[in-house]
Length: 525
Picture 1 (cartoon, one colour):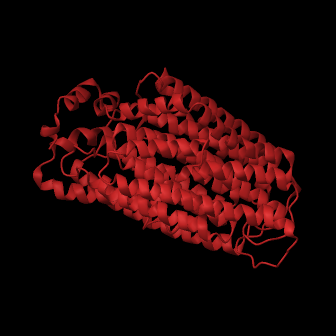
Picture 2: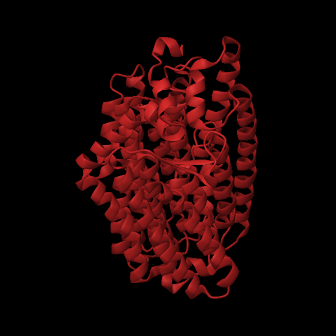
Picture 3: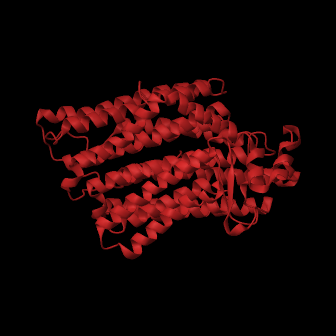
């Protein structure tokens, strides 16, 4: 019964997006109704999947009844269900803000593109086949291209072209990696690869390492890690702020892919790869965190400050993932939820500042309308993103530091995380003082536009828009209040990831799972 629900989170947004595009494209009100109803339905489906996997069950769905590894298979375990639920909830929050603020009326086909992006995200979380991970990457990226340049503008279009070119290069690299992997394994089903990785002849080990390295480079590009981060600051800073809020989950797909592939197919005890991936991830993650913190301090516009804070959060997340043990993965997943909600809230604050001030440039101007309310939202979101107590950012970073205290590079991890957090606090304090404090000095110098100037819309500053902005902040507060139970769930997810045999048995059958379970680390190597 449960298995038939697995495909629903992919089918629903595909149907809603197609319906909106074909029949409702000339009626914005009906597009809004269909979009909100479809996304609310997606949240319901995500809750069903979460409830079905909460007890530890792993369910698979074979499209067309073609058995794995020959057919396309979708797999729902605790990790996939968590990512689907987080994506659906964030999607509904952002869409509520988009509708309340009138952003969907500033360009064409917003709601159709939004649904197709949700479809791509859901497919990437649920697929059990690494080729279809590539396919769903392309679906969500094609939709994101359109969302990125929504409302137009020269600067936004230029950033969009850079975004397209970089991601096309990443897609090409992904195809090279897939070709090499298929040449080694003769399959792209992840469960089948997990079985075969311990049976490869010695002569294939060198190519296996190359393939694993190529694949991790693709995921680092999607996640925005140094040195493949250069597309991310401009994309996030120049995209429509509500779209950037949804993009807060898109970079997490890179982290999800690393966790999925490198705990299932290339775990640390696997032949050939060993700790190679962890050794690549940790230094890049720490450099990314440091660079993001410096970008927050450099400022320029609140949009760029927020974009660089998102880059720093990806550095922290990947540093935790690089631990590749249950405690580190549990801490990474808690921090992933926090950084997604807090980052989305901060991007929505950026939109409010632009709507009320005309720009988010960090120069003193006349006080904006509703300064107190926007300043309060900024204060709460900035505290959460920077990792100051008592909100979930502080708890998330504390979990990461605690999980990595026995890591060989723990001194570097603690130093970069703590110093980086301090620098981010200073950067946010500087930005907030310019926007909300120095504004009352009455100085209003003209500033050259450093970001797209969108035509004003009174709906953007309405009470409904502010209420929608509060939704991700409420999520941050809930994550803080229930930190213990949530962390317990994350530990259960991490423990399930360590049971590769259960995943293989759910996809390929009990015999394959039992065969994997009998392999000892010595036999794997």
